[in-house]
Length: 190
Length: 285
Ligand code: SF4
Image (cartoon, rainbow over all chains, first blue to last red; front, top):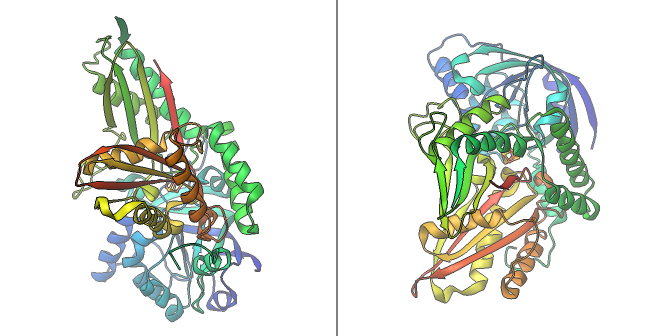
């Protein structure tokens, strides 16, 4: 398992290096999006309209933070469950997104898209939003302020911690990790 | 006869919704530390370390433990001899609790995570309504248990109507399968609340009540069910899912089973899953 400190946007050559279980510390910009923002982005794409940010080489972070206290850039900001964005992810990968960050399993279709479009799925640790907020330096709304915590933000991050769950070679850390630690004497569920 | 003012209820609720979201309670912390020592996977150990560090930052800096500050769920035990005094424009106990939630979520910079309609999905803007379960009890006690319930783990919960002939093994398989299916989505290590018996709706309520048992990880007083809890915990922690689903031993911190009488022809079983961010506070007013 390798460790990489990288800056966004990233290139295909970088994505090719990544394997499941690698640690990634991201510096630069992350774009946030949850259910409603994704729906709106896909509508824009369908209508052939311009998007609020350039997708090329960028990462989308599935998060809806708590409001910041005065003087702070952001509140608690851990990942949300990713499968809710499965329907939209392939389209965004096809248009240049190089990674999505969330928690939990992705659909087969999303995993196929990772291979096809050279992109990765990363996890941040769920339920440690206070700790993760320490790696976010700035947060500005760039689209859909009316959605509140679901608006699209540009986050300026420094050494944002994540781990590769799905790479472009079909690897899946959730499956591999589970296989490694599953007790073969477990009754029933084999 | 004891008199309790609705203003006091509101202020207490305002405080506890914040406290729960900033201070992970000692019993949960102790259990995570214990599991950290036992965890075989290095990644799993590191996840548990981060959970503990997160709890420290949340407590010291009043940053919510998790960005999903949850639905505000309450279990209220109201003594039949308590007289509620209306004041400060508060016209009912439900009103006072909702006002406490509204004020607490705003004051604590907690996230508003409630939509007013399941299909039209407009945010209510103040995290109300509160989800309140009432119980009338004898005497003049007034106890409130608050749980901030995030969606990640709640969405992985399940209920099944078994036949009495299905027996304990099928039920145990169902519990283990539910946790297995939840996998990383429910932010393991999880706490598993099992409600057995009752009827369709009562079993689910029991499963949530099971989560509220303190200290977390203590066992049912009935030896039969205490053994069932031990068996289930062992099987779940042999699944290999581990902290955050990255592989490891510690998939669940605890399994709590609660039971209730049921129909001669029914055997309902419900599983309510709770994540490691177990934000529960119980107070007596
Ligand atoms: S499941 Fe729990 S810890 Fe995970 S994101 Fe939801 S509320 Fe937070």
